[in-house]
Amino acid sequence: MVLKMYQPVTMHSKFRFYLILVASSGIIFLILYKTLASEDNDSESHSKYVHTSSQMSHSKLPTRGGSLVNINDLLPVTQSLKHLERQRLKEAQVHANINRNAAGKFGPIKNIIDDFGRDEIEIDHPVRSVNERVSKGLKTPRPEETIQIEKKFVHLDLKGAPPIVNYYKKLFPLLHALGANGLLIEYEDMFPFHGPLEQLSARNAYTKNELNEILYLAKMNELEVIPLIQTFGHMEFVLKLQAYQDLREVPAYPQVICPSNNGTQILLRQIIDQVIALHPQIRWLHIGSDEVYYIGECSLCQKKMRKYFMDKEDLFIYHVKNVAKYIKEKYNIQPIMWDDMFRMVPDETIKKSEIYKYVELMAWQYGPFVELKIPPDAWIKYGKFFNGVWVASAYKGASGANQYLTNISYHLENHMSWLNVLSKYQNEVFFKGFVLTGWQRYDHFAVLCELLPVAIPSLAVNLLYLERQVVDNDLFQKARDILMCDSRLTLYTNYSTEEVLCNYPGSNVFKGAQRLAHLNYMLKKFLSNSHFVGWMSEYNIQMLFSSPAHVELGTQNLEALSTNATLLHTFIQNTMPEVYDKHTIEEWLMTYVKPVMNQIEKIRTNANNLLKFRSWPRRPLSK
Image (cartoon, rainbow, N blue to C red):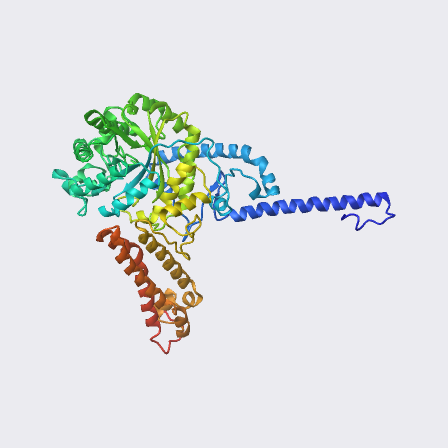
């Protein structure tokens, strides 16, 4: 019809041919333009979700107040250079494999998707964010095979913000309703050590009676308990003390215990004996042993390594084997340990040590692409030697050392990635159970990250996902129903401007964290207004030189900010006792609320100082 509008009735055939050629070229150009524009839009729409490198692309979800800091990205700070270089080489190999697979699997169909529209085709696109899919009402495809996960354990990290016993009475029934059937309890200094170990306990540690009540509550709610004790790395709660200073592998650092010191095995066996005595029915005991990056550095270890022709991997296995053998032979309890120190250990070393006879591994990874950090050859090795492998995801405490709100999207992607790994390797590896970790501090000395009640929505969504193994609106509706949350609880809730209302145990703590997000959002807007940045700079303040009109305009919302901060402080003081003792409440306020209040007070003081003047000196102001 377009051609006929311009074609004369008596048009010469040659002229008609050229006209058709020009029109056809125009149509082809238009199609190409729209295709490129569509791809540009796709790229732009993902720009805040997707990180692109020269090697690969993977989805990354939106954050508030800056990019997420993956706990895994912090590890190279403490890894040896040799270990780090080997890890980088492995990651490069995995990147290359992913690129080849992605190119073959997704390359030919991308143009088809652009032509027909994204809503009309269900396909597992590697860079499509979870947020986009759920917001459009699309289902995220299941793994290639549905994974039967019989054991779903929730990790309780008690080295920070340990809940009061009464909170467990409400929490454990909720965990049971969400599908959990076990607890991995990391006591650290909250365990009621006694006798020669008494000083290992915090001053607010659980008493023996309180611990027995917690275990009874777990049993009543059909939650099997696995205690976790540190026996190699992350032993700060012990090695920080002067009495145990001599057991450090590196004198200046209290992270790692020396495996060659005679006092080490004596101490660890005392700890093990006391923990098992209060857990007489346990089938497993987790002995930690992750991130042991300071090893073979003290004179005792170096002497042993020279004498027995050992390298650091041999020394590591020697120590954990001694610990595990003691537990298994004395108590007939199966030890579990973290897997990361085995990822680069050669098959021959594992075979020769026979460590697989004594431990089950728990493979951990908390980011959105599990197989990038635990490559295929590690899974083949685990399946070849070890009788059982557990896996550990994260529902909180893995996206930033000082995060106070949990990004559900980030942790959901971690669980989706884990199910893909389980589906891929379930015929090679005997997967025994799934642990959802919830870290409360990055280590003993770190600040508190997201509090447990704040992360309950993330825990609920991810537990339900492990059961349903598909992400859609029904998943979130079920989570909202169980937690009694309103419709604002979604993957893409903006806590800076929205407040989700819920009614689950501890939901007031979640409410307080949301209000802190809003307060920080308002403070950030305040600090960026042109009157403030232009007339209340450090130079203005130091020189006591500014325009009163602009100072007044720049601080006109200061009192509202101050009032909101005071109200939040009071709200936390009144509601947190439902979950925490006074020590946790004070620490959280000092970490997250008091700095805001101090900043507001400093601004008020500076403004008052600037407003005192009615005349000002000639320039230059500096002497």
